[in-house]
Image 1 (cartoon, rainbow, N blue to C red):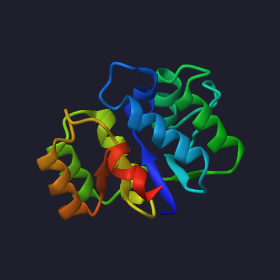
Image 2: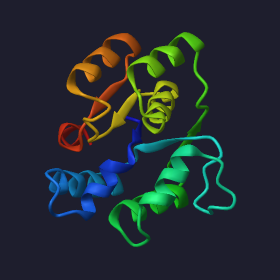
Image 3: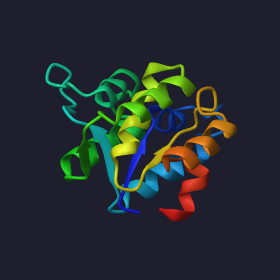
Length: 156
């Protein structure tokens, strides 16, 4: 694996001992600290809120607390050259497809970035917008694999 798109919730769950994803999120972050896999974000990403033009960057800034494991991982990616920047623009037919099956605009962006990534992998614990049936359909129709940290950890 060379790159991955990471949904904010996957990183946030490492801060919540009451989350059923707590342990797998911590393991995911630790494994990502110790490998060479890049994190894919949309163009314009900056941890400086006034300079950031990236949607994923905005999500990270808004939801990850400074000093948290997830925040520290993003800092590590940024300072070690392990951020890959891709366009969030995709062919209209695929954009329309995503808009039809995913109601949450925020989650659409993560899928569009995953579409333009090399590996087409999205780490996400969001089963509200990415239910199992939709995950299978997206894999079949767009070749994007949406997996939990627990599913991904053996590959990292």
